[in-house]
Length: 186
Image (cartoon, rainbow, N blue to C red):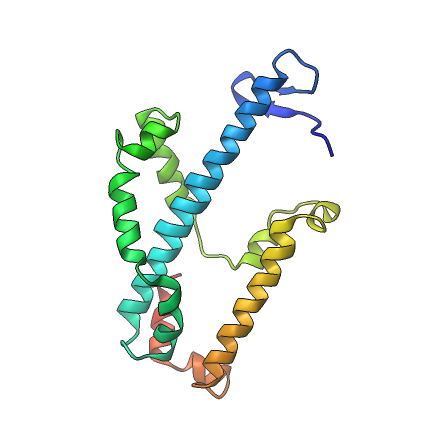
């Protein structure tokens, strides 16, 4: 399907195909999407928020041989090193990340501050549902279709693994280390 237009915030108007500045509006949209996916979703949320929280929760709340920590270790292996180097190389003003994207110093700092202060843990299916997108779009949206399927695979994998150590959800929820782990995400 073709685009109906691109909203250009700085001029406060909808630019539609055929307008003299249509190519510029499309380029701005693409740049904004690359920035959002690269900086927000990948760097800030995936690395600095979620994976850091996962590592900290697992290492601070569970013992070295705890089943939950053993399950998660494969997913956070070497995360602390990667995130440390990324924060040193990409985050500071005047370093690589700042120089690649078109932010002012104030805008760069505000962008990440907004991400960090506005984030809260939400399971992927709920996150997608909360976007209130039209059903006809959701039916063809790869992130929803593939993402929810992958979420289900991970959920089944984790549940199957944990059933080896916990007879039921009551036993899992009764484990003080599991409770302490999840407290990191509240």
